[in-house]
Length: 385
Image 1: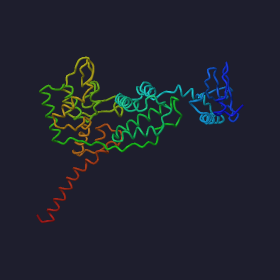
Image 2 (image 1 turned 60 degrees about the vertical axis):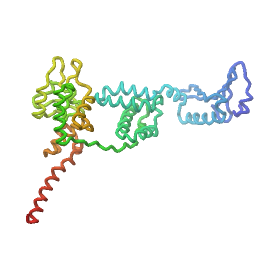
Image 3 (image 1 turned 90 degrees about the horizontal axis):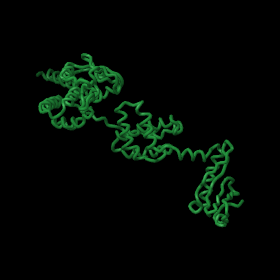
Image 4 (image 1 turned 90 degrees about the vertical axis):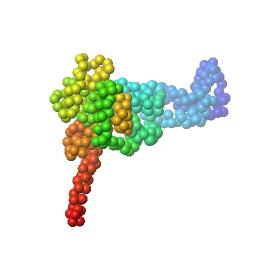
């Protein structure tokens, strides 16, 4: 058997039947000569089951003898270590692409493990950021540098960059469970999240008064649905999250409390003050509709509050205020009235003290005011005034 190189390959004769010629320098490396004259490099070996396996390394002319031999040496070396490159290649050809993995993740994992709001955020990340970035790349080929590059791409939007990284991390953890990637191979590990600056916006007493007047004005004119107006009023008066008010059912309301079977933090009790109860008492209960904030379709709740809120806040001249800021404003008002952080956490339904602690700095204002009054009085006495 000769050493396969350009000279020996060019000298090979074309015969009626195909034949193989094996390299005398690297056992298992050879060339296949077809009756058509086509010559292709390959390796041949026996797997652990003693079956003969062959892998094509490319056509001579497209691949040089030295290039093919280098590839062959790597593959045959893996065989001596117990590898099976033919099986690896077969598995790789049938491996899921990132688009396939995304859809399986959204169809098989998300519905049974995530709340509706989380599922919507996952879908948004998949459609806008993950699928366009990775597309038909094999899921098993995604490595840390690729993840880091995508995360870095959205560095000017740290919140979105971190949310996308989080979705990918959950997805790759699930891929390991499904056997699509090796255990412990999550490429999102050690990719550091960007620091996020929490947006703090609280309505001042004057702004709250202005919002109240705007709601009354809009209600009289009828420019917004009564459901949208009721929703905003309940958000302000309860400190609830938007989804909790949108999906609130009459059966949950019991006197001065609302018992929510499910929320972001699980089942919880919402404490209703007299003003919130009064709003509820003014809302018409529609037949065959279990929801407090009703939608246009029979038996449905109002799903789109963003458009009405943009119009309402424009009238109230608070166009930089998000609906979630109404929850922050509820907490701010509670702090201003001297309520303790544990009590505020109870009102908001927080499960962890750290979540409520973000409002701690607001308690400084009344303390500063008290310090000002005391020091002013002492200074007056010291001065003999």
